[in-house]
Image (tube, rainbow, N blue to C red; front, side, top):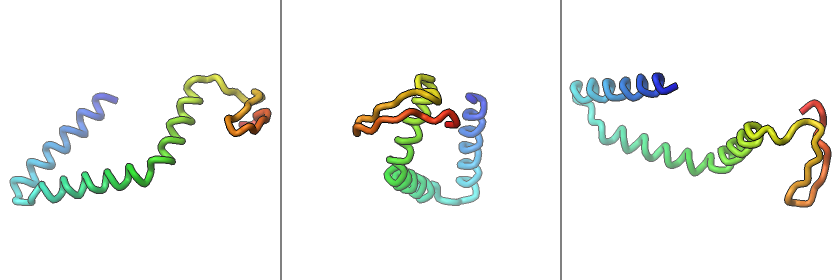
Length: 83
């Protein structure tokens, strides 16, 4: 995993150098990347929150099929065995 991250960062650095040598301005590309990242993070805040909460529940391995669950909203039920 770390090797993949190092390769990705290295490829980005090489791509930046190549674009710089070719005369392509880097600042507008970085601005576009930052703006789109901010927009995506604001738009996907709730779905990503739910995704990571679900991953945490699965990783904790405390909820299994057939377990009785009571939600904070007051709803109570048994989880079906085919979850």
